Figure 1 (cartoon, rainbow, N blue to C red):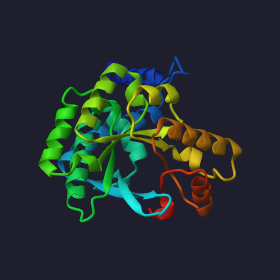
Figure 2 (cartoon, rainbow, N blue to C red):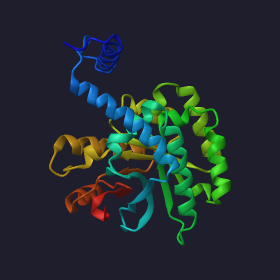
Figure 3 (tube, rainbow, N blue to C red):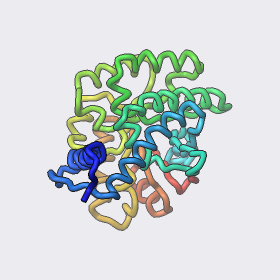
Length: 277
């Protein structure tokens, strides 16, 4: 059914084996053409991603972060976009997981941080700039030195730079991550916990690690004024931030009612499409 040539059969069984490894609910996998197509697409994307970094196909866009009391802008989060020569704009949802899986995220993340700092250094107003850092970047032995080099090269004040990390970055090696965070903070860089509420042990993590900001994930902010469970999660996060003296930023604010709810609950700052895409 699947071929007469040993090489072809080996290739197909290999594809099925990798699919079985990635799908925990499917210990045995039978090869099909859709599986092969996805495998080839992934291989092509890895090749294209390597080329994208060399060919200057990436660009940065910036989402406003606003103080809630005055609604004045206080900074921007950097978001990565890929302008593929034939496919057009490729969504980060598609390519970031592949970049993380292959380790390409280390080089891509380094480019993002350097480019963001370079651009921010040229702004007339000293807004802060927030950059996401992948777990694979944090475990690099040279990560802190790379950050120091970027600060020196671009001339940006370290106090304007905020690195966003998720709990996934911490879980694997807590001692190493804590050491890295302390070294970064010694440079003057601020560190935010991203996607708060979606991880495993947020409370313990906040106690153990020196975060300067908590970012509530957009999934809790959407329709928070209409959903009692989301409202309870947001309120408890804000109370926690207040008790630990860590300011809280709510992501994904899109409508006036969400903004009004967050203002009533005394959230410090917000970002989202309400202020522009």
